[in-house]
Length: 153
Image (cartoon, rainbow, N blue to C red; front, side, top):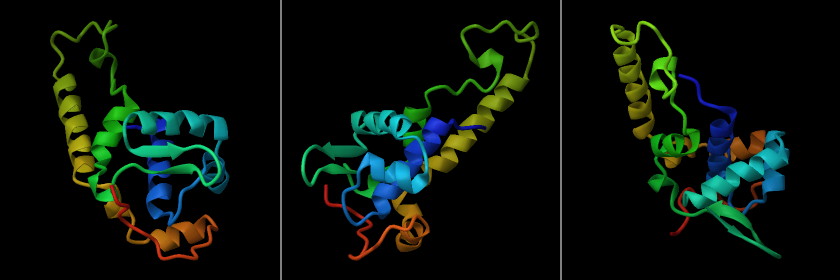
């Protein structure tokens, strides 16, 4: 199984926001991860649309988790953000594989995909935040205040 860079960035944004004691900006997150600001903007927009992130414009604005980290299931995020789980051609609508009618590989790959997602369903964002201060230190983010693992709803 391979997840796209887009999904990877979405998970990184959620980890950053979950570990951050304050609101963050897209520019700040892009700088800390050393990734494209414009690409990250698209990712954050989808996270806002899906209800994982909330944004506030203006002075003192920024982005933050829209719900507690314990309520953000990683498998759900991956399903919503990834979008395409076409592991092999026969999973897609444009299937041209000649052996598809008799092939049993598709069933095994489907089971593997479901197992992959089931493992991710067993984790919430909160599971990846007990070391929030260490994560922020690696990105050289000062932590003047204690890190909040669960933001109020």
